[in-house]
Image (cartoon, rainbow, N blue to C red; front, side, top):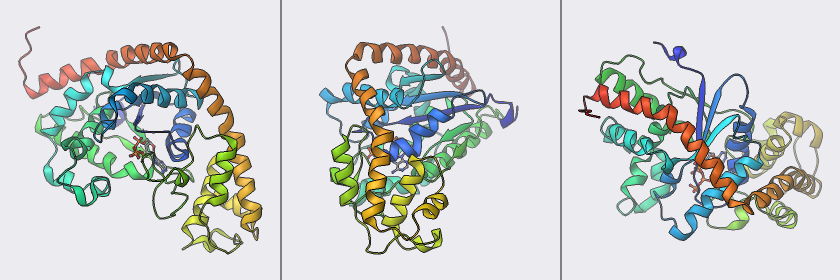
Amino acid sequence: MTATAHTPRVFSGIKPSGDVTLGNYLGAIKRWSEMQGPTFETIYCVVDLHAITVWQEPSELANATREVTAAMLASGIDPEKSILFNQSQVHAHAELAWIFNCVARVGWMNRMTQFKDKAGKNAEQVSLGLYAYPALMAADVLLYHATHVPVGEDQKQHVELMRDIATKFNNDFKAPDFFPTPEPIIEGPSTRVMNLRDGTKKMSKSGDSDMERINMTDDADTISKKFKKARTDPEPLPETLEGLKDRPEARNLVDIYAGLSSTTPETVIAEYAGAGWGRFKPALADLAVAKLSPISSEMARLMNDPAEIDRILARGAERAEEIAQPILEKTYELVGMLRTR
Ligand code: AQP
């Protein structure tokens, strides 16, 4: 079996750890929706087990899971075309993650920059789960023998680590190509949407200030206000993209415009060369409102019918389990676990 012998299958996930941001939308969800079609089987997951690597209020987690699901559905993820479910309903994720905890090396985890960023100076106090997160992420993808993982730039290192885990497992247990080595898909102008107040930091759900991100649930006035107050420099937009070098905030706004209008940063610069912020920011805000308002209205409609969201997730979990369970069983067999029933 070679990597190409595996069914072309996409897996990706998003944590229910706060309001879905424009970064999550442009870097992940919008692209996930575009990947539905004849080329790939697509599996999308609300990764609630990942969310609890940092504290989540128990009374809010179920609703946050529904809200992220609503954002995915409203952005065009079709539960008939894709398998859409939440991670904790398919037990095999946690089981395979344990096996991968025993395959991955501590030295590999120590190199993960996202852990260093998230733990900061507090590394002794964060959960063991946050440290082991990449092994669970490897399990999420490899449980389905997925071959492609569309993610934002921040997840690239984790996809490389999952390739190392797959290779080591296949070697250790003498099962050549049992697990595929998945390819990350990181493309387009919005693989790293930056914070609106500091163009050197990523836009995140859990960032300190609401003004640094656009939430998918923000109304038109809030979106306009946030773009108006977004940090920029005093210079107008340059004639070419090279002119945005060393101007991270300006580059970010151009990239966001390109992502929202499904074009390239070059095209945006060609249209707005020489424009000041007084012209560009309102145009960007109008574009964002036009693209995001239909999504936020649809999210609100879906959130009025939580039973329907739960039904979609339950059906998705059943379909996911049909693929995952035989792969988990084969994994246990390769590891040598006694199976008596
Ligand atoms: N700023 C971003 N630009 C582009 N892509 C992004 N993604 C996240 N932020 C950006 C992509 O969104 C997908 C889901 O991410 P996640 O929720 O699983 O985890 P995350 O990367 O840790 O996202 P956040 O928003 O930063 O969440 P918190 O603050 O809770 O940790 C992934 O494909 C990710 O690359």
